Image (tube, rainbow over all chains, first blue to last red; front, side, top):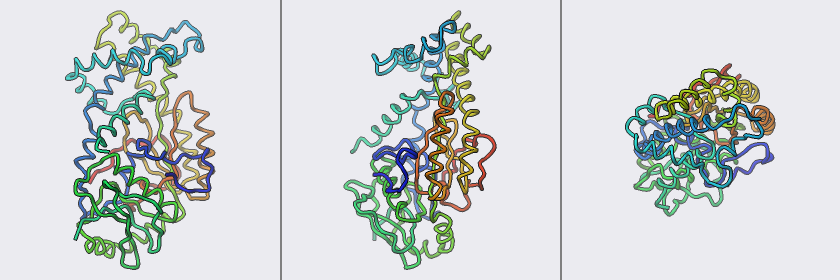
Length: 144
Length: 259
């Protein structure tokens, strides 16, 4: 369901029906709270926000970008060596480097977590970001 | 006597959206509770309420539908009143505050802009940044976990800086359409999260400007515009909302105080 507004859809983007990641931060952290009322859902929200998988994913992200850096050929023309090619293009749904990185992270999860905590929020590559998020909610809403 | 899940506060007579479903499984029926001067949109609170995808979506979509028909002060997800009498009591106790908030939000909507780094900018950064190139040399000479993490961290930081710098003038320009600007909560991967309180009449212009500017900086920053939304970020008078124009730099990524 989108807001029935007179504004052209192409200009603005209401949150897509059934999706959360566009504005989940706002729904959980903004809006009015009436002090005397219980927010019974705090435990669930904390689990959703500070999930250890997110923390691991940030070191995973470093390793992924290190790999991308390593594969960039600075001598080559920008256009000839575009990143989609480096990342394995459309053949693999996830770049192979990602899997290697993930395995490595699992092995060293202890030190990785410490490192990631220091940096807190890190960049997650575009399509993976969505992937992680959906995972998240799927797990959380597994009762649907 | 049963607990009530509260979606938002509206003026009396605000229509309930047809077909809207509340939280819980099966979805609870929405209803309006009020004493004549003020009304709250509520449903029966499920006994096991958590931040489930199902319930977050119900909260979001109920408020989206309510906001289409007039001003609404949206509640944060998960607010539950112990019973009807207590809710009516609380509404009456803060009647003036709520009425002022409804007045302030009448005819306004929230637009949210999130800024993300663009991975494709990395080749250009490597060419321009000697430190990054030297880290890459180290990682190639002594491949391993430590050198990789150092290189990846530097690359990530450089991408984030680039996106932040590119987005700053865009956020400033969008602030011109807004009556108020509020930094959003910290979001993983996001280098900027800003909400704008925009008059209905200016929403289309805001969107057009956002689309134009987003395309201009696309090589350096990915801007995601979401809205129009109910005014979540401007619901409380005393919250982080500040007067327009937008801050000179990118908004500080703050974690909102969770109460």
